Amino acid sequence: MPEHRIDQAIDWLTMIIYRSAPIMRLNVKKTIWHYYLHGVCGIIDIKQLIMEKRAKLEAMDKMLRELDDVKNSQISLLKKITQLEAENINVGVNLLDKALPDVHDHADNSVDTITRLIEELQDYRNDFARKNNLLVTEEPTEG
Image: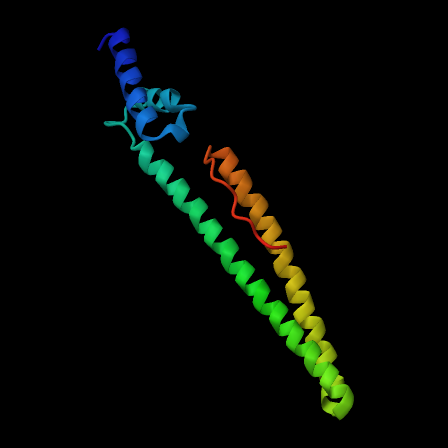
């Protein structure tokens, strides 16, 4: 196949991909040319690759929402423990006086750990989106 015919085919495929997946406008031509030169017997489905990355991004968004739910549950737990500590001031159960501060510290540490994890996963998600040209608005998380 003459060189100009290959270029025309690549331009045509690039145009189709531009219309169906505008996210991957960068390096599309380079990717098609790379696979052609290395003897791949067909064009790799770039749209599928984009969808896999988008699915991964959506999974990270879901995990962020779930972590936020866990954080909210831990905060609720922390409030209940605080309420128990306050009620025990009046009742004076020695067993609770000894145990509740440790439970409170553990719940408080869990909230801190989950908050850090959410922040780190949000940064990872944003870097992943940026590196893969997946321009999706960020899911706001409380924090």
